[in-house]
Length: 507
Image 1 (cartoon, one colour):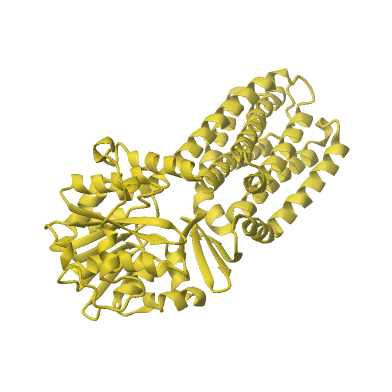
Image 2 (tube, rainbow, N blue to C red):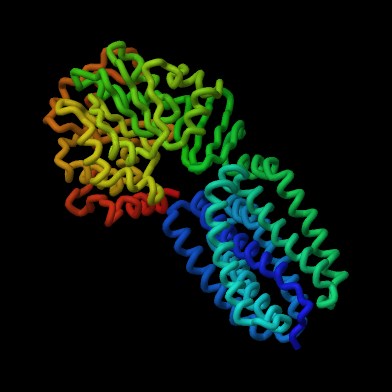
């Protein structure tokens, strides 16, 4: 029977909010899965597929719910709030203590997705039983559902994740689901059979979620101390990446999205090879471009050359650069290089910068993170290197950080082949960095180079004539038939597959 006094406006608002929460859970699990397990395309694809399927299962199950619809809806909201609220915590703990953490993630997706799939059908049937204009009401339900999804999908990357991080975000969104349950309990009490039980459970759950939000930083520090071998001294989530800094005695290490970027004990090996090989072979190096390198360590090496007039550093993550410009632990290592008057800091995507720049550079140093996701993979494609070539002087040189020729052979030689596809003369070289292992680079130029011309006339801790010569010689287990490797392009991103394959083999 239609109830003309039934207030369905609260349920409309509920639809908007729970839809937003649902999208956030989906994105959150995908993001955490990518952070912990790598291969972002795989994690997002599996999460979305499983989540949608589980929602379909939930919608199917809803037809068996024939009475006490409000009770069931409140139960679902509390259950979604609890499972979604602890989702990040469970994923991180399983990664630390359980070998099959991926399986735990899939169980989470199915459980939350199934419960989310129950929400809208149950809500629709509640409205159907109590409203007189079903056609208009149902159109409103689905409109609010889609709008809520949009709001959630925008809030997650733009505000929730960069501001709150994984743990606080999941606890906060879980809190919202439980608050929805409490609002329903108090506004539709005459429709709820087990109201006292739900009140007790919802308020206990709300307190638990609120404490989770309040102590999320403590939880994060505790979990991260389990993930990293050394004491975590800094943890910061930016819009683009998770930054973690650890310290053990005099060894300071910086991690981005769980991948080590440098160890203060041996980073000089990497950065001397990255910077002084191209600088030692080019005659003119007044104008230098660094793509990436927000830690300032490559800039530190460049500032050893008095004839450099301008260093342009392009990094998309301003928070990362600001940290490395101001944090005393890092500035001690990079010698305050990012504050030099010669350095021009540009906070922009490297691809977009190259598309728009009219400048040409004597030396280009590509010091980007490994291609472990699709956005980074774009910066290792033939089109990206074509843009680099356009920004390089006729006699200029470029060097590209190219992963490990030992641990990631296919990835390394794919980068080499991709550079050659843009008519670069390419000279691969490598260096042993204890904290990384064997690491590789590709020296590239428009003109042919004579490697015997490399002369390093600045102070170094590692490089000398003998070590430079050895860098361009590869052992048999570091080379591969390049014909069997594909070029990395925007339309066929082969490199990320090669890279993820190597990660699986060496994890």
